[in-house]
Image (cartoon, rainbow, N blue to C red; front, top):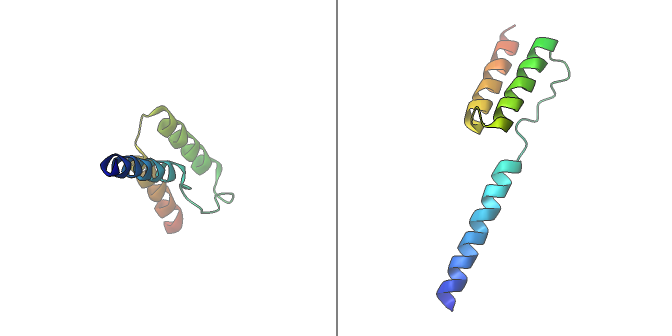
Length: 73
């Protein structure tokens, strides 16, 4: 009985961690000042992420690239 409870608890913790990872905010920066091209790029990236064309890691890297280019301007 104790082993089953341990396994069930482990699976529950794992599911909670996966849920929290998927639902965390991607980026909390205020993007309202971004120009139209930057907003369009973000929109396309979000669509690609939702359809599975890119991974969460690829999405975050592309967002960072856009932010870096913006900061250099």
